[in-house]
Image 1 (cartoon, one colour):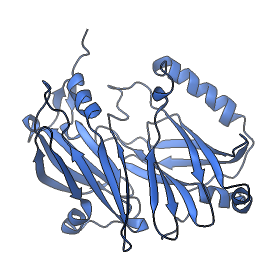
Image 2 (cartoon, one colour):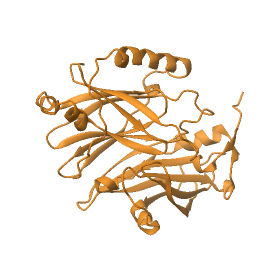
Image 3 (spheres, rainbow, N blue to C red):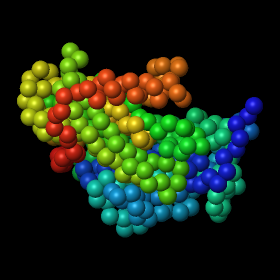
Length: 317
């Protein structure tokens, strides 16, 4: 039996591309978006607009009617030009949301969407987010998909398990995790809370941190800052500077992006972390709830108390 359609859905979030603006760190952000669904009953033209949100999750401005993508079309957009035109202040952790909306929804408010159509567009498309360090011009990026987040009509559980076995810190390198807290409506107000441990190559827990991410915002976990907060920076670097971060949020679905950043050159190696469903075929529903509760009890709740960390001051290259 086909799943029931979703009513009262904001078409702006039919096929969004949600990305961080790293202006605070001296980077410009470009996005390469595509209408990849070709030769399908669901193929359609997609109208494109972009919203920008402040560090506090408030909408700063909207670039309307940027373009319409035909099936199979790929376009690159440099958000620096749009930000300049709209005179948007890029301060703190500014967030961008590109809205790819079927043209039949043009000018409409809440609509009814077919789940199969929505997921067909999401699964067919990888958007590429590109960061250009200024003024040196170092370029890097990451491709990922963005399905519905923190909407009980699509997922009953709002949890995030972060598994990142490439936390690298040296005298000139930091590893950052940008955690994005988004949804399918700008009325979303839920804050996300994540606990996380840094683990060394032997499996020993090194330092624990906690972080809160407001609705429609993103926040950085800095592995370097976590070590500084706990007085462990020099000893961690001395043992090789390699570790793993394991994090758990039990109140929201977060989108984690990892960034290994050279503090001298400004270069960043970017990646996204795959959700557990890529590793465990039985993941989901009640099994997901039970597993996360066991993980919390065994890995976080019984842990010795250590200094929590905030973002701290991220160094500008």
